[in-house]
Length: 309
Image (cartoon, rainbow, N blue to C red; front, top):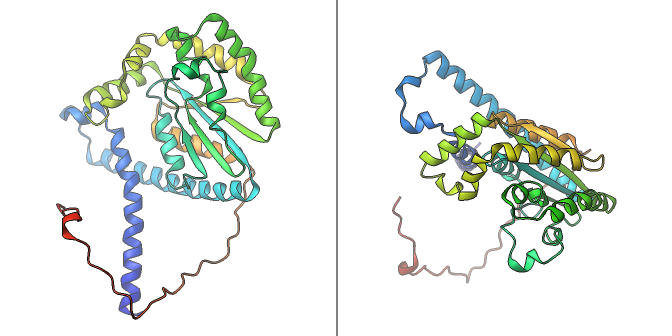
């Protein structure tokens, strides 16, 4: 192997490591309140640190393996024209966004896209309730992940009084038929509820309060939801009971441990579709066409971004 080939392999390897570093950067989100406060009383022994490092290695090893399977799933979805809708519901700070990031991280955003709808506009409030969600449903060969969904009506809208009793009951009459209709039209619906304990949500809210990088995640609505914990619990129980149907059942992810929740959810998701590895023709990088009369023009220095780093 000549030095040029060795240099190419080295650069490819470094680029691969950099891509994995993105995942390590995401893990900064999992800092605990104690770490942020510099609590020395919780310092770990060398044995505990070694165990912690080994757990992280196992987590990343399994995460990367599952992400490789997600790429195979994506190829299968494209090849078969499958249509998938995945709903992620749960209390605030339950970890929905974290698992969505890990699912989509290695996938093509044109194939696997996220729908995170804001509060409805005045115009949307006068439409059929499901109308604004329909616009985001997948075409053939697409997966759509809803970071919260039409089940807002059964949760936050019910608890916060944003819908009437009549609208609430109409939702429960309509949603099973709506989902059955989607399934009959060839859309697979997978519904996840991320379940966390009272103490764990309290800890995660404290983490957001004390972390300047995460304070943006706390809204007045989130704080109010904390106060109304029991009302949300009752609303969740009614929702699961009245909308758990054979065509689109609910799946509950135990989410007090973020890392386990991510791995368990992705593993379960992969098992919901009979995907197989799709064969691809070998990719050959073509030689670049070169012309003797081509001269690359210099970039004006006044538009170059300063190299501060």
